[in-house]
Length: 468
Ligand code: ADP
Ligand code: MG
Image (cartoon, rainbow, N blue to C red):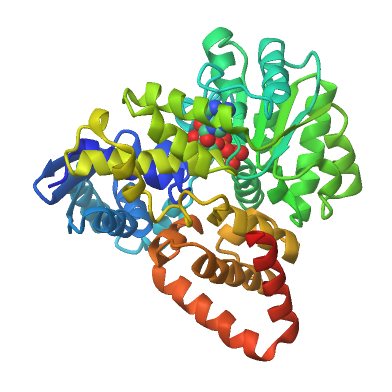
């Protein structure tokens, strides 16, 4: 039996694990036309492109996660709105122009084209998570300076601190605070034109415009923005042409005193593969860091989340989660969502859920429960990234570059060795990799360690650091 509540829990859980990214969630999942009937899930998509995207990217992982939770198989049935109408039109077109091959059209259909029809197409509310507001952002010692600077920028964009550069580790609230600026401005001064985007979208649009000779439109789009909010700028590393474009965009917005805010996983000085002049520009304004939250802030974040989700969860459970998850707020949320999802699936009244039951539900989430040292997947990823001098994002990505693959395999191996998470759980934490990928990685590393002395020493060193 699956219903809307369980579906929402599973999707939220996958968002918290970053298997479904925020933008994908806002675009593909938020307004799905979906019906549930026992184990059948019927989804009607607005067009075949969204259907294809859903089938190739998410259907399997949702099935598998649900199975992991309650050993239930679900069946999908997919429909496309107006499919018949579309097919008839296609047939008609073919009849009229029998020589026109649809291959080209098909290829183009897969690329999400930037919308240049209206250069005033700003404030893309679609991409913003309505939960990411200042009100929902819990302030602690770890982020108070950053939150104050962000609020100041939202209240008076372009006037102080330009650019505002926010950096910190994975899952600490950078995207939340960046979108809070956009949500605040939209709520208060909607005449300002905001461009919020992940830097990969910037790169994609740039490449698309270059290929399709639309560079003017691309430039216009940015030149007309009042505020540019760019998430995860570390992805610009080694993208020379995009970096050049970024440099010019920066200059023109800066000269026009338009506000820019960037987030990044490291401080500007550590952006080693950035051109010197671009790195310099990043430091012109104010640089603020977000660090991991302390215990009290972690509890407050969990309470805030329960409030938002309108669930009452025993304080003891919240304290237990806060005690065990230290490094990433995303992991913190993910533990809470897991508890909520279990209660929904097994029809347990969450109000009455006791600590012992919660521990049982979360037993795969942490190892060494109730012991002082608990090793989390994110701690391992961070340690391996540091050792191999790659970014944590790279480790979770699909990049196949040799040094990144090696680091990723080692991280997967260490997760198997040092946590009690299942291979499926580990896969989810690595951006939705299949459990067989984890098994292969572990075998590969243990084989390599037999011959490669340096690798073995390095892995043993990491194990020592992580467990001491
Ligand atoms: P990052 O971009 O740094 O990887 P996110 O902004 O995606 O991290 O945050 C991960 C999750 O943690 C989000 O769901 C976000 O709402 C939540 N979160 C982070 N910091 C806070 C905070 N201070 N208060 C409430 N929720 C937070
Ligand atoms: Mg982020």
